[in-house]
Structures are given as structure tokens and as C-alpha cells.
Length: 495
Image 1 (tube, rainbow, N blue to C red):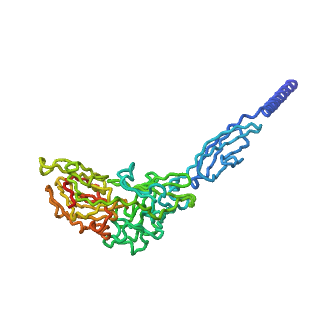
Image 2 (image 1 turned 120 degrees about the horizontal axis):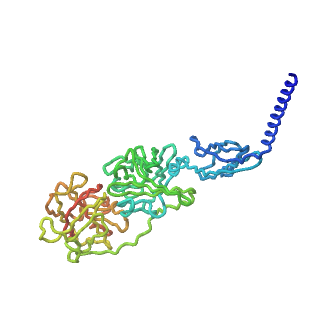
Image 3 (image 1 turned 90 degrees about the horizontal axis):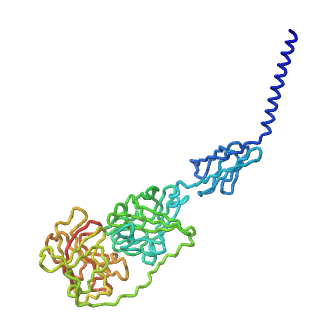
């Protein structure tokens, strides 16, 4: 019995020694094995409070130390660093994870940091940004479409409107919009009183008067507000008198008095040394467009041309005959008054709507644009020594739609388009009273040249007193609207 107990104890002791030996051997083997290779990886998120701050989360395995290269020259050994960059850009971030044996593995990720208000920054800068009319090439214009925004008229930095090139339009990031008139305003034709049209006038309330005494002073320099939609690139200015481009360019069309708000579309390009902003007002009848620039170094901004280069005068012509019957283009039907570039479609030699078998006439068709005239620009200053009257036959069909903007207005215009492309700021006009117009019937309208009925050029003298007139136009259907209309004309004659 004792022997067997002894044997049992011996066996148990032997087993215990074996177990201890096993664990000792196992423990020794584990310590001696090389460490597993590290796996480097991470994820990141951009702070909601600052788009330049990036929060990194380390998901590496089998590593004890870490080295971060943030791609901007800065590094970190933290496990989960937070890093703030100096500015928006594209950065390659590299994480190197190292295990206890010094084995390293790396993982990289490209991080693009875009200012969520990048487009707003282009418009308004970090705090504010000031824009002026572009002083190279054309700066504004009007045309039939977005693709041809300055086909009808454009302005260059040539001294013809110098005050407009000094104007400053400043957008602030806090939503303020500030216009600085720099002491002068441009007297826009059809908007300002004739005493101020077509010149740079002192920017004082006394000069900010419309044709009938309207108060235009809200257009002077002041602070307003703006909203910008980066999805549509639409800017809305709010506050009575807020404007950009030309004071009369408003929403949804041209205006003659200050508005409480105005909206337009912009496009901004980053160019070498300056930013370029294209402003568009798109209407049913056409487009007004404006070009503005913001120079990073104001010293690089071109100078404003403040004097117009002299234009060589035209030769004078004193005709004894000046007419267009519109029956054909032959000399027997046209003398001097040859149609030139116009904003209406003219077809000569069509059937007379009142007598299809009679003498051919001209068809005057309005197209979809706001200002429409049949124009005749001559290569001479016409001397009117042999003429005292001007007359025109007009037939207005009743099937035209006069329920909208189309009217029965008829006018003959005489102006100088050679010395000043903005002839409408200085022209003479002979107007028909629309109440006297009879539909579906030919009517002859005769005017005394010495008695123009309207036009900002009246103070400069009548055609009988002047020697610098080279431009003529016929306007039918009214102005300031795009509504179409078809009319007939004949016998445009000076006698």
C-alpha cells in the first residue's frame, strides 16, 4: 500500500515537471520568433469647423511606432494626429508604421483640400474684393445672344467713357456690396435728363435726374447687400439703387429708375496677375455683358484713357437727290440712302399689301431684340442745303399683335455715327403720333427738317444748321421691347 502511494506521487511529480518543461519550451519559442510585418493604413476626415484641418485615424497593425509625412513639409510621430494645412491644395500623406524589430511598411493617400467657398472667394476674396471695368480690349457690350454678346455695340477704354473705368465695385465676405462712384457718373441716354446725357457728370444728387425729373440719386455710391448662388453662378444685389455694368441694366429688363434688387450671372477666370469676371444680363431680346478685373498687384492695372483720339472727319456731300423707294436696289430706286447694318430684316421689292399688282415696296420685319431700327450710314457728312423736308410712306397691317410691347409708333432718326458710335445719345428724331396711325392703309408722314420733335441732339441744332450728320434710321413698332412685327415702307425721301 505504501509502495503504491509512493509510485503515484512519483508519477504526479513527473507529470508536473513535464508540464513546466512544456510551458518553458513554449515560452522560449514565442519570444524568439520574429515579429509579424506591420500593416500601415489610415483614414481621415476634414474638420467641419475648418476645411484646412484634417483628422487622421490610424488603423495600422503589428506596429509600435509611426511617422507621418503630411505632404506640406510637416511630420508627426503621433498615433492619431490632427494637422492643419496652410491653404487649399492637393497633398500626398504618407504613414510609415514600424514594428518592434524595426521593420517598416508605408501607406499613402492623396488628400484634396478645396475651399467649400472657393467660388465665393473668387468673387469676394478672403474678406473683400474690388472689381473695375476691364481696361484691355472691350469692357461691355450688347448683342443678340450669350455667344455673341457684343455684336450690336461695345465699349473700349478709348476715352469715350473714362469715368466708368474708375468706378469700383467691392464684394465683402460678410455680404456687403459697396459701389464707389469716384466722384463721377455717366449720363446714360434714355435715362438721364438731356442736360446730362452722353458725358461724365459730377456724382451729386442735383445731377442725378431723369428726363421728367425722376430721382436717380440712389444710383450714386453707397453700400448695399449681395447674395451668391455657386450652383447657378447667380448674383443678386439688394438695396435701392444697387447696380453693376450700366445703371439701366436691371431685372427682368432695362429700367429708367433705380430698382430695389437686380440679378445677373457671373463667370470668373483666374488669369496671370489678375482675375477676370464676366457679368451677363440675359433677356428675351438679347444680352448685356460686362468685363471686370481684379489685379493682385494694382500697379499692374492698365491706365484709364481719359481723352478720345481725334477722328478724321468725313468729306462733305451736298446732294440734290436723296431717297429710297424700296422697290429695288437699282439707282433709280436708291440714292444715298442705302441700308447698312440694322437690327431689322428688310426685304425690298415685295408685293404692295394694298395693291399686289402695283409698284413693289419694302417689307420691314422686326426681330427679337429690344432696340430695332432700319439704318442708313453714309460715307459723307450730308449737307441739307437742297432739302427742307423728309417723308416716309408706312403701311401697318392689323394682323400684328399689339397686345404686348408692340406699338404703332413711327419715327425717323438723323444723327452722327462717325464721330461717336453712340449716336443715340445725340440724335434728332421726327415722331408720328400713334393715335393718328390708321391700320391696313398707306399713310404718308412728312416732317420739316428744321422742326425735330424729340431727341437729345436738339440743343446741337437741326440738320439745316449742322454739317456733321451722316446717319439715318427708320423705327417702327416702338423701342425697349423684343416683340416682333411686320410692316411695309416706301418712298423714304428728302426734298
